[in-house]
Structure formats: C-alpha cells, structure tokens
Length: 319
Image (cartoon, rainbow, N blue to C red):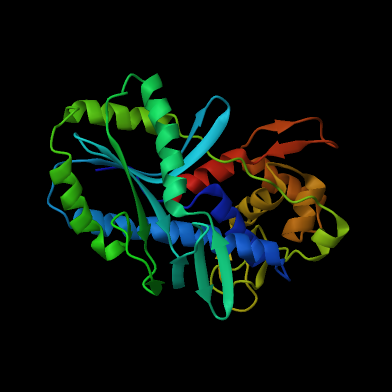
C-alpha cells in the first residue's frame, strides 16, 4: 500500500518553471533540473516492480525527508514489512557504471565521467539515521536492510553485488529477503500507524528563490502563456485572457502564471510586480485580478501586498 507515493518535490516543480520561463537557461539550473528529474523518474518506476511480487503486505513511502537533532535526511524509498524494513537508494543513471579503488561510483557516458559517493554508503548512513528515529518512536527492534536500485534502462552495470542491482532484479531480491527475514516483528495495524506517523514527520526542503537583479529580470520570459500555444502569451481583453493565434479565452489564465511567479520570486507580490510579470498596463486591472484571488493581503492601497502561498498549495494538491 502506498502511504506516500512517488511525487515531484517542490524543487523539481520550481526547476520545471524555470526551464520554461528563462530565455537563456543557466547551466546550474539545467543541471539541477536533470538531477531532480532523474530522481523522480527513478522513484516513479519502482512501484511496478514492487507490485510484481506476491509476498506479505507492506507499506511504501517515497521521498521521505525526516529531521532528527536539527539535521535532515532523505530516503528515496522506504518499505515497511512485518519482519523487516527496507531502504532503497535509487540511481537513475545511464552509461557505464563502475566502482573504483576508492569505493566511489563512476558514471562514464559520452566521453565524460562523473564521480558519486558509493551508493551503499549513502543507504547505510540513512539506515543509521532512520534507526535513531525509530528508537525515539519506540521501534528499536526492527531489522533494517538496504539496497541500491539502478532504474535507467541504459545503465551498463559493470560490477556484481547482491545489494546493488538493476530494477528488473528487485522482485527476486525481495523474495530472497522475505525468506531471510521470516519472523514478523509488527502486526499490520502497527505497521500502518508507524507509516502514518513517519508521513506526518515528513518535512519538505525549503525553496530558494531568485534574487530580482537586473540581469535575472532581463532573462525572464514574462506573460500569461496560452495553454495551447505555449510559450505564446495571451492578452487581457474585455475581462478575459485571449490568445491572438488560436483564439482561446480564459478568465483565470493568470493563475498558472502567478504560480510561476511564486516558484521564481517567492510568495509575496504587489501590484507593480503583477503588472510587470503578467504584462498588464493598468493598475486597476492588476488590482482587480489580485483581489479576486481571495488570498491574504497586507498593507494599504498603495503598499498592498498579496500572499500567494495558497495558490501554490492548491496547485500542488492537484498535481
């Protein structure tokens, strides 16, 4: 049972917006986007292979980020079985993969090599951190096992290790583990309550917003995108947004654009910023649009600001 399904984290949603809104995407944004997207695709591929096994019931949590003693750690996927818990470190990497003499993971593709920490070391560190969290919750007697799963279909794995495997081998390795750990430690209702508790303890990584410097602002693609002709922008005409190419109309097309603004510049916006980003000429039109959002606002008429966090929460709830 999925207690926390694979999902796009805030950072990936933010980077997707930046990929669309930058006229010239900075290299660090492209690199971060590729890394976060790979992590999401890797997590997304796992449930299919987990569901292939016919084993005891379990509860699955993806992308769990927990805090202990003011430090955070993130687990790609955590599976709660009655007899043991399983942590998987997911690597969505293509190309030739090998472990060097310094016990680092090396990815070689297109005449380029990248160096990564040994993935089993990462998983074992998460194991020790999770063990302490479980001890705090009164579950200190559960065995925790770790696996590294390579999910990319073009991963050329040059080493053999029972705990570092391609995703296609996961069902068979899980069957072996359920035979090895055959003594149930928790009842199903205890597993469920623990899983729900861990979900409630999840903490999102805070977003880092762009600083609105002149260089950044000149590199931003502004406007309300037509959903059919993106990135062509729409114009506000007679109380609605209209696309000059396809004729599409929408009174609320500014809401996705304002969500883009949030992901880029933060939760607070004023009339001047709204006019700049939505390409509006009229102070009064911008004011009416912002007021109709029915979000929290601060200050008087001239210095009024609006908190768009509610828009972002609603957007993530639908994603």
